Length: 116
Image (tube, rainbow, N blue to C red; front, side, top):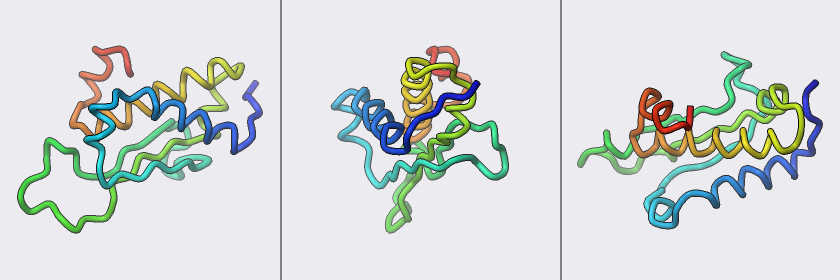
């Protein structure tokens, strides 16, 4: 059974997950917006999505670009969790996973590191 949680509480959990990012890395994050949406319309089971140009792919032509986005899909996460503790854990994993894509870390490496 999906977990019921207010939008404010879920947003707080996303903020807490962002606070888990080491300060040195957090300082390197620039031009990124974190959004919370109910579901991804193309893939309703998707928990999060990074959209942008990873730091490892930016070159001298990068500039004036719209912000990259990290979208966390609230309803999709709540649906797979059975209690608030699981939500806390899944939000943290999803946020770190998507921020890692910003740093150029691919899916295979994330799975190897346990952030799959």
